[in-house]
Picture 1 (cartoon, one colour):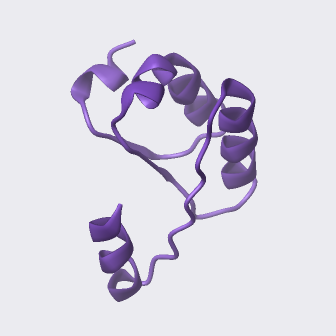
Picture 2 (cartoon, rainbow, N blue to C red):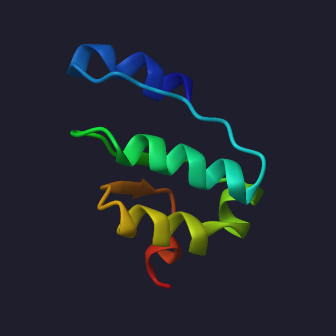
Length: 77
């Protein structure tokens, strides 16, 4: 996260970190991001995002958010 935060300003990108702890928070965070234009997701790899990857991927698709995933298998659902 620190490397992303360090690189964002130099590229004219505002980084908004949305820590989530359950599926409801994932949905709220993605709905919030999806309501803004010119946004996208960077999904950090951890046990929580791996366990919830189907939800994250389906919500990103529903709200037409470009997303970057750490592993290829996130996109293979």
